[in-house]
Amino acid sequence: MKTFTIETSLFLSQPRAQVFEFFSNAANLQLITPEWLRFDITTPTPVEMKVGALIDYRLRFRGLPIKWRSEILVWDPPHRFVDSQVKGPYRKWVHDHRFVEREGGTLASDRVDYSVLGGWLVNTLLVRRDVERIFTYRRQRLIEILDTSAGIRNRDN
Image 1 (cartoon, rainbow, N blue to C red):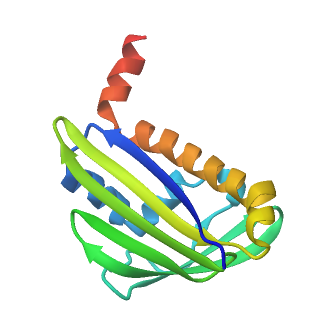
Image 2 (cartoon, rainbow, N blue to C red):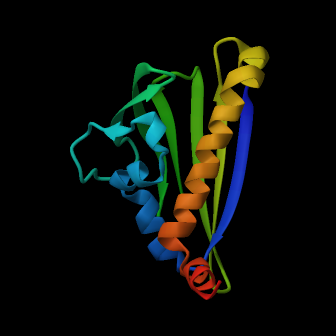
């Protein structure tokens, strides 16, 4: 099974504790997911985040309804957490979230290791572009929601 990787990083001008708190609230995932996915958390909120926590979602992708279940594998506040798809569209999906304090804010990094049915061809033709679009949207929304320095720049322009 071929595994692919997506890595992103974003500097946010908020303290690590505040950034981690935002990411660790499962309900906030809906705020940073593109509307075209019609994403909905079906697990009652608030979800108690800890190792072994299960979170269920519904979404529509290319018109197809998809159920997704994630499990929290690593829970290390405010430094890191890892979730893994238990049920969903991927053969493998492991998402490592890391938060590092930097002067003036927090570096939030994501690494996703994933596999798809159809391997390299399906990933190249369909999946990678969609995953990159989702993370591009997520980046924009995180800046809008959490990055106060971006908000100040936008008001001055």
